[in-house]
Length: 385
Image 1: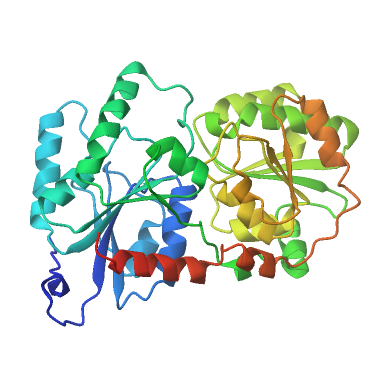
Image 2: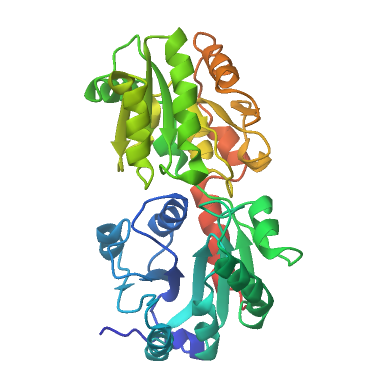
């Protein structure tokens, strides 16, 4: 096993990068994965490097790119429900064998799993960060055992966590309560998302979209949080009034079979394109005419930032998606108590009255430019916890 020793922790001036251990990446390229990789691509990797600890022995999103950027991926440590004692022993051994990290940055959607921070403290990692990326439980109401575990961890974390971060004030308050936390914006490379008519024309042709098609776009996992059944209901109502409507959906998830069945039941197969996971999401935004995000809850909703950067009119859930996500006048909040008919009517009103414009300055001024966020986080990693 490759071990890197970070002598700079002992005050020696060596030309070696500070190494930060990132925990919480999954195989599904969602919000956490986008946040980490956007930062990783832009940091000065001669001064700062990321390594990754996987909690399951499975590929993680962007694995090959991580290796190309110089990051190590550790998979020998993962959660073992059948043998928790062995798991804790393995986690202990991992941190004992890896003294090179100056910080651990643990990305979480709940407080059900916080153990890496405890062992990081035991073996002297000075900065131990817990980062909230959500404002509710992914699958709705948690089970009783999980709820008990989260309550226990709520009282434990101050003993080993040095810094609390969140993607929004809502996400921070939901997870950390009255504790002091810092909001780190989910920065994006604005130039990749800025509206480009040439890319729009080329990509629409590639996806089989005609000039007359009115494209409603969705980017998100097909799971409970994203309210996928309601998305289909809204589109059904849109299609009843606009036969040129197309639903373009980037993402995958455990509810995909049920959603495919509902699409078939409604006779919408010819007008719904489920694209699965894509590496060209920034270009797919260009093909859209409207962006839809009727989530049951969001920590922030980074896809809303991306959609605004692409100049799209956005429709999202009032009181469920943080107001911090509205950084232009393109975002329209609608209550989930409103019917699918109402949502469809609001969306159809924009069909012919919206001219897409460059939103670069608005995104920068709101603090979501990746360069500014990257600089903020680079400085944060080097401040003693």
